Length: 266
Image (cartoon, rainbow, N blue to C red; front, top):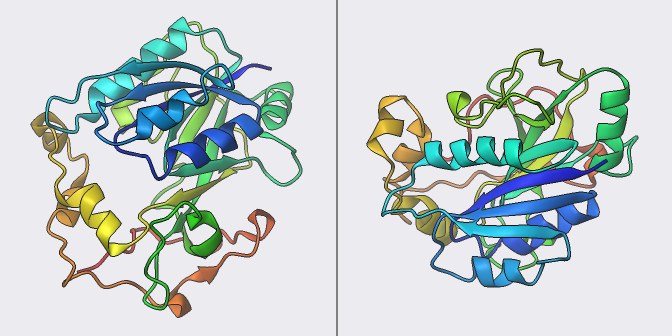
């Protein structure tokens, strides 16, 4: 069972190491598309070449975040690379199988044996709180332990699929749901820990100065992220820990009563 994760990055030096280490533990190899990062993302990633990371390429950014060519490149790579299963993943995500499986690779073997060819991930969004606002450091997974389940609609993150002869479609859904003829979705969602941002300073760096491609905005993509561009250190209100759920282990992540909008008010 060969699993390849298609990972795109831009200035993800805080997340890239943990993301790569998790995917390798899960039995996946990784192909990295870097969107012209200006920090240490690529330098850190280079440490994993031939240790699970099978390739790095640069996709020029040209001053704006344009999701469509990134997704189109992933679609093409899923045709070119030889694998049994593919993952569409972002650097701030930790993907996990249901607790009855040891790794994602093991889980995909069972999914395929059962006659299915695609998997949805249930997102659990981790954010800082008023009581604990600062996690912009390498140990963020240890210290940032409050989350909410996020599910605006089902399925929301169909981000794993069995290799297809025909080209799959990621761009139509802005990467949320892979599409191809004959898709058969596994009935149990896998798990995703999503670290949306790590501190007020981090969210301002991540979203405050981001410019989006006009073609994407006309499609209605990135609506909430555009609003986040108006955030300042004064108008951000972090939630209290009492408004979220405490994280104890992956097996105890609670998907009940999911939120339909991300918590980032101002």
